[in-house]
Length: 217
Image (cartoon, rainbow, N blue to C red; front, side, top):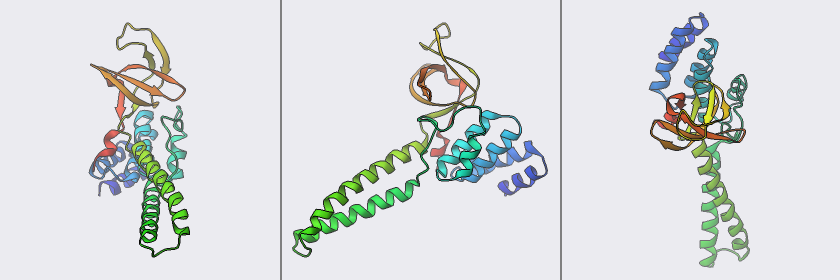
């Protein structure tokens, strides 16, 4: 119902109402990519690039093969397709299922051969298939970790990274609102982050919006 209210309000040009409704929908169904995508679009129309980045990033990580999500992210003033911010357009579930089925088939072939119920050539095929299954399952785990975004956050406002976790520390690389950062360390009210463009340094934690809400059931 909240999603439908959001669509109606958005079509009528009532952006604040639409955004609030999509927020309610996303809170109620945090695994629904359309709720996050529409929340990001409503925020974008209001000129809030940070909330747009959060909504669209969350939508992409729930639906990594959706081209429309990537098109939306391309509207943002910061890069959203690098090593940190990006996500390969690969269906994680399909990769995992493929690896699992291949592994089962390889294991079955080896078991049958050991019992003398399969020709010798079955094992010559089974071992490469098993290795491929391991690669696929490992890739699926890696992609799932990227999609969970547990260590990712969106920068709230422009500024600079610092060499140390202190306001008096030397500034290093600049960051912009809507940049995506990976948190790699914490110290009190500061976090150490990595961003695309080989940027790394310390930033105040209140300058980041976590993407980890995707882990909600």
